[in-house]
Image 1 (cartoon, helix red, strand yellow):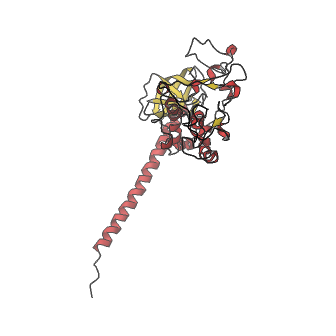
Image 2 (cartoon, helix red, strand yellow; image 1 turned 45 degrees about the vertical axis):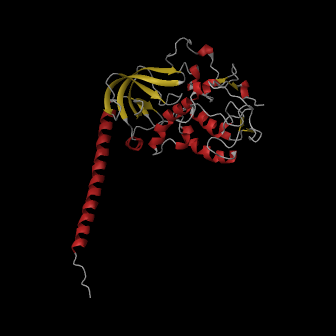
Image 3 (cartoon, rainbow, N blue to C red; image 1 turned 30 degrees about the vertical axis):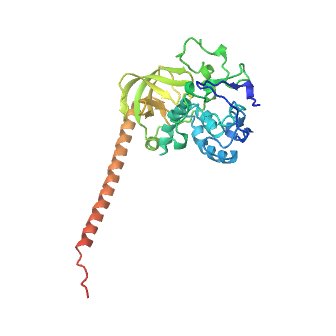
Amino acid sequence: MITFSHKFFVSFLAVTCLSGTPGASAAACEPIRIPLCRSMPWNMTKMPNHLHHSTQANAVLAIEQFEGLLGTQCSKDLLFFLCAMYAPICTIDFQHDPIKPCKSVCERAKCGCEPVMKRYNHTWPESLACEELPVYDRGVCISPEAIVKAEGPDNPYYQDPSKCLPESTPDFPSDSHNVHCKGAKFDRCKCKSVKFTLKSYQKNNYNYVIRARVKEIRSRNHDVSAIVEVKDVLKSSLVNIPRDTVTLHYNSGCPCPPLTANEEYIIMGYENEETSRLLLIDGSIAQKWRERMTRKVKNWDQVLRDQVLRQQSRVGKKTRNLGKRSRHLSTRTPPREM
């Protein structure tokens, strides 16, 4: 029988009726030995997993490739999703076909982390495609929302009611005095500082740069966002940025880079073209605005444009030289036959 840490158990919704017992040849459940997945609210798994790894030793080597991505905190759902794929939950009733993560869990992890991967010329792995995963209300699947947890401070997701605003305000603003609310765990956040330099600007290749005043920071269902009033658009890409109130979406429960309400910042971040969202993710910059910053950004853009022109000029020169050499060789008199 499976036991869950902190008295967890999983409730599943299924439209179809499941009958019959697993075949005698089905592999038995085994304790999870993958270090990254030992914090999950299940402790038994079954191999082969959904990625066709025959042993947990093979699965460990594969899942460890995501440690760097997990370190960016790009999505609060990423670890849950990866463990549901690499160390799927195994129960007495579902030994024959391990339960898959819900499609929505995959989509949230992908939405949060694919922009980070693209910055390093990677895309979301085809082996982790969301399209074939079951929908929560139309099949059997597992998601964080389906996990019923023990209450109280022993629960790692415990919320201290005395430090939270009323539950009746789902869009309540959160600040440094409200760090224990809605599981955002701002108190555990460690934001990596990115220097406001040409080197960072060139390396991180931001999609947008704006000057904006922060109106409020919102937290809803563990999703954190910043509501800002755009004063000036110094750079934009495919997503239109009006000089109006816009929402900047953090891709984790941590508000990094940190922003303070009623302060004016220069903000450099990324975008999700599919959802037309402006993102604040690992590597984004938010510094209190000074007039010299606007001049710096314009100068940096000019420097980068000049670099591109010089590079194009060098490529064009090489191409012309190759063309001349080719024409020279083609006009040479062929040797006479003896």
